[in-house]
Amino acid sequence: MIGTPRRGPYNRYTQAQPTIRKFPVSKIVKAHIGNNYPTPANLNINWCYGSAIVAAMLIQIISGLVLATFYVPTSAEAYKQILEVTRIVNYGNDIRYLHRTNVSRIFIFRYRHIARGLFYGSYRKQKSA
Image (cartoon, rainbow, N blue to C red):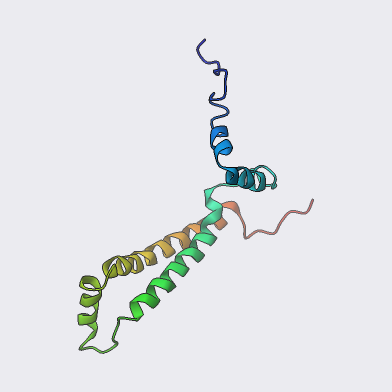
């Protein structure tokens, strides 16, 4: 019949079970993270911008420290060192690009975090029950 689930171990409602049978780590993770923790019904992607800002800041600090090891702060050598980082150092161009674009991510996450607070009214006093 059309629309009825198939019988057996591989119907659309139990597709995750073969993975759980193969890997015992999946059982442990499912038992720990499963539906055991109470979460609010309105939990969505908009509630993760604060931690995204922290992660972006950590990436910014680490990539900045890596780039600082190659940088010489004199006006005569600074541009030469930037060219050296992008052309000679292994993955230097990737680290520099990550450091440069991560600033935009931080500001995007920051303004989305502020907009979420304004949209959900987080600045208002809570109603007492």
